[in-house]
Amino acid sequence: MRLISEELSFWRDLLSMLEAQYGSNCEIVLHDLTKDYNHTIVDIRNGHITGRKIGDCGNNLGLEVLSGNAKNGNRYNYVTRTDTGKILRSSTQFLRDDDGKIIGSLCINMDITESLAFEKFLHNYNGTGDPAVEVREFFTTDVKSLLECLIQEAQLPIDKTPEHMDRADKLKFLEYLDSKGAFLITKSSERVCEYLGISRYTLYNYLDLLRSKQEQD
Image 1 (tube, rainbow, N blue to C red):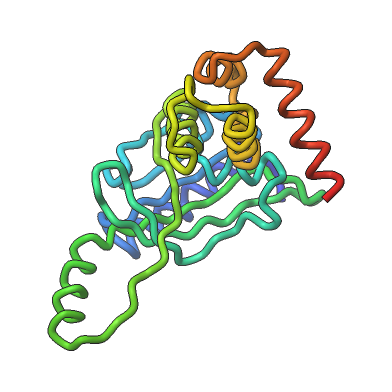
Image 2 (image 1 turned 45 degrees about the horizontal axis):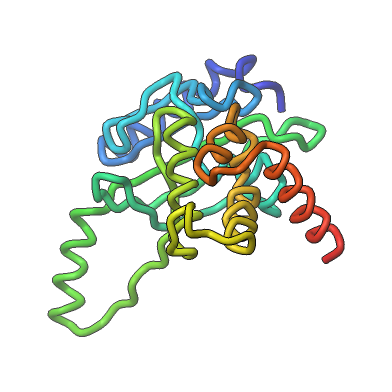
C-alpha cells in the first residue's frame, strides 16, 4: 500500500460511499499516521458526532499502537463513549505499507445512543440482553488535551493527588502512561514532570527502570 497522501482521492471516495451507506449518525475518520500526531485527521465525515475536524489529532488507541504496546491494534465492533455522553459502536483498522509499517487508520463510529435507549426499554420489558463491554477511547481535537485525558486516567486507580504519591505510586502512574504511548506526544515529559513534581532526570530514571523490567519479563 502506498502512503495515504498518495492515495487520498481513493480514500475520499471510499469515505463518501460509507457516509452515503450509513448516514449522518455514522462518523468516518481517516488518519495519516505519518504526520505530526497533533494533525493526523486528513478526512472526516459527520465530525459533529465527536466534535472533530480535518487537521485534528489522533486518539489514545492510535498512540498505544504506535508505541508498540498493542500487538495488533485493530479493533472491531467495540463500544466507547464521548465526553458529551454519546455512546458509539466503533471499529478501527490500521493501514500498513508493503513493509508492514503503520501509515494510517480508518475509524468508524456509529452513534447508537438512541437505539441503546430503546434496547434498554426492551431489556427491561423482556428481561433479556447483555450489556456491551466498553473501551476507553478519548476523542480530542489536539494532543495536549489527549495527554491530559491520559494523565487523569493514570491517576484514577492510584486515587491520590500527586503530592501524596510515593515512589511506587509514581512508578505505577508512569507505567500506565508509557504503556499507552503518552511519551510519543511532543513535550509530554515536561507536562508529566510538572504534574508529578519531579525532575526530568528522575522521570527518565523511572522510565528506564520500568522498561528494563518489562524486557526482563
